[in-house]
Image (cartoon, rainbow, N blue to C red; front, side, top):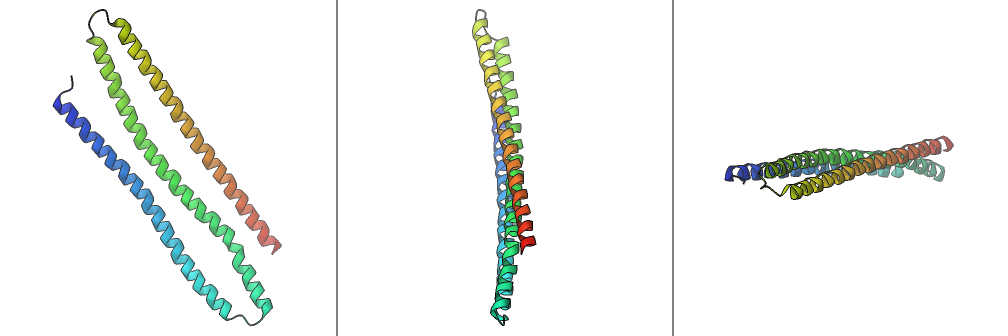
Amino acid sequence: MLTPEQIFAANKHNVAAAFGFGAKAFEGAEKLTELHLQLAKTAMTEAAETANAMLSVKDAQEFFTLQASLMQPTGEKASAYARHVADIALSTGADLGKIVEGQIAESKSKFDGLVENLAKNAPAGTENVVALAKSGLQSVNNAFESVQKAAKQAAEVAEANFNTLNATAAKATRASKKVA
């Protein structure tokens, strides 16, 4: 049987973990917001500079040259922005994953201890039921570990794919600069 103190301690721990999870998620949202604000600020500054440059154009040739020069860095900027967003998302996801993994590991440990305690105090003749419960618990633990490994692998593949896409975009941008 659990004592009221044990229940209170478990609830206190779970509330602290929930707030820690929320704080990490909010931290990631703050980083994205800062990135978006910086992007907006930069875009406004560049728009003003572009407008001034357009107003100073004297002929069609100068206009087309200016237009071409303005288009070149767009791919690099988009790639850098996407990389920043991905870095924030991956970092935040990893931090949240560590929190969840820690909570699950702790819960698993406590539950395993509870099953062991029940097994020790089980009445005679219930050995088969206890063995079945332990077997079921082991199956659940194995399934959870498999899902956890698959999720990590999926995250690694997604990051690798993003890095490949980013590298390809950067090469294409460099190639278009050489052509222009």
